[in-house]
Length: 235
Image (tube, rainbow, N blue to C red; front, side):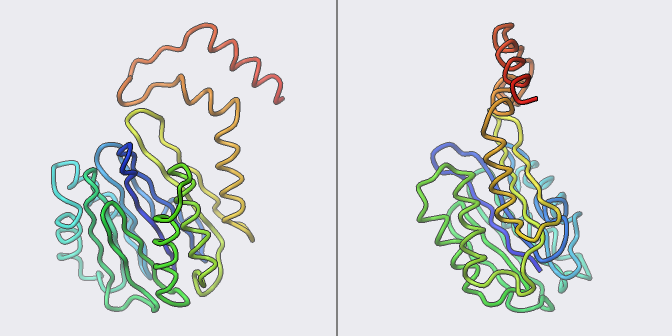
């Protein structure tokens, strides 16, 4: 019902994920992330948001992505209907696809990268998303968007797409969490939302709010004046 990508930017260590589905609200259902800890994507015919949150907690306690996925999946009697992928802060990955997942279903793992999907037109969707991310020289978040676009071009969710999401977490920036919950063109809408988030005044405001590596950040008066002027000009 969904395809997703989780990745770690090798140059910066920033973590991110993107997902798209033929159903509603893919961001709320699938993607989870904590800066400095990891990312997760929990999806499937009967997905468990508890899986996504659980593997993050385990990785936060020091487990690798692979071990966290194994520990989360093993005791769940409903695991055959679920799919889970995880990425830890070191770039390690783990993935599970339940035996009752609607085909085409599977995952592709690499160093700092995991792509997963189910109810796809074919497994070439996974390979196209992976290859597009690896081939791109765009900024990190845009490489994730390129992966979604490539997966759609290769066949996508067999029902078409209704929703898409992007999540990027970093200790030096506020979370970038963008969601298109219902649209006839969710990938285009997500890209437009991303571009808006990179423009002023929103981008400037993100530069002055507290972040993990500067939790008591206080904006300078002149910065707030500029932001106020930019906001007024957009009104």
